[in-house]
Image 1 (tube, chains in turn brown, purple):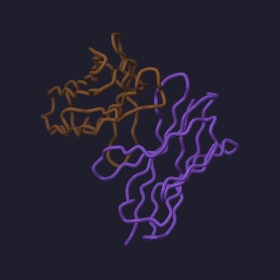
Image 2 (cartoon, chains in turn brown, cyan):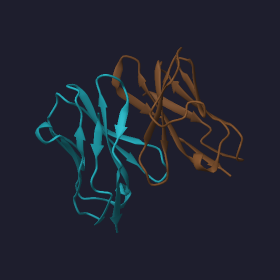
Image 3 (tube, one colour):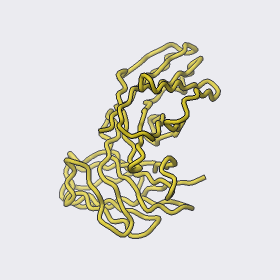
Image 4 (cartoon, each protein chain N blue to C red):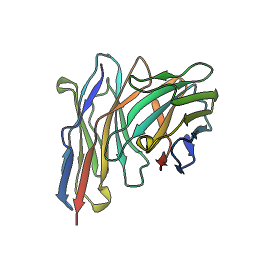
Length: 116
Length: 114
């Protein structure tokens, strides 16, 4: 079946550095991908919609200059957390629907970011 | 606006008991999809079920069953004869027909006690 991968699965970085997280759709194309953030013991909150070939759409309250999204191909979206701070420590999850079938959405395994 | 409410924050039951997780949703879309996901301690979401708004038929899959009632905007999930391995956080979620965004409820943390 369709699979979405994320890399890395976990990352620890120093405050002020930038971190890039990759989300790949395996064996299917995804013109749209979604990025979620989940703080401990909380729900998944949608951060942004990544659109292949165009700008990402950010949810209210999410800083687009801090969370840079690039959807360079039909199988890859990247989320870069710029100038990370401890409050950015979270579990980041991406998802991708198979193009044309909005009800089939596949989630990546998540990336746990810890900012020291 | 779309919204998913899971009023039960945390539930504890003894193994072999039945347990129902409640989910109430709000949407203005005429076509929408409802989901349940399980999130074990590892963090990876496990897809359990997807139901579209035109299919109100209840579904049973092994020990799991789902009750979809449009009249009350509810999509409840029941685990029969619970097992310790069912311990996890369960999320109810909603996706409308205007975009593919999935909106999650706050989740219910389920503890199955041996």
